[in-house]
Length: 268
Image 1: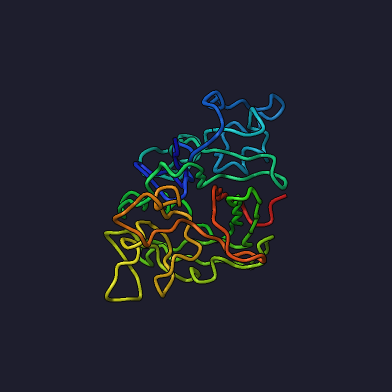
Image 2: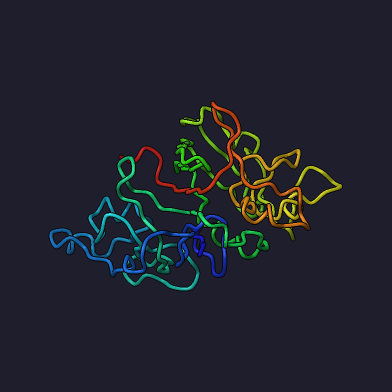
């Protein structure tokens, strides 16, 4: 079963960031343990808001090497008694091991069972949580031949809703040797009910059955929320949906699984 994690969606979201479900996780539900703070740091840090997985790792507030953990995110529902700031608790999936750790997983998919073709309101809360100019984005993909591809963007920023959650990215570096999000830079987020595409005669998000920062020429480049190839090959009503592809130094490859995660820029 595929589930997503992009940010605290009250219902569903793009990239699983601050939600209580994980995108197509292979981890068992036993990873949903309660947070355990290191005894020697309990008193000093007990009133500190843990905003993401990076904070949990930095201040020793994690129980396992990876899994679901609770963080405090800004929201209008709850006021923190000690800091007088607005917080609510969400469960996120943390990776404390990869390249120094501190990663919050915002999307992961493997079997294609989750439908990312959702409306604007399903995504807006999660996208709001990603409005941080100081993030680093890491995308890990496995192609149908079992080859791993790792790409990073040193600078990941999602604009406010009034800017249609515009995507801004920093310097690219990765094993693919190709910036697959080049055509998505400075593009607004699009869903089937709020398509910000540059083409007046076609609604790109609806056409590709996705929700993403769509390419100005309505190409599916870099879109990891599109239907996967297992679905599209059996879909007689949408023969143009051929699956998810990624450009690499070896050519264009079909994606079997993907994971997106973020952490503060420069974290080590």
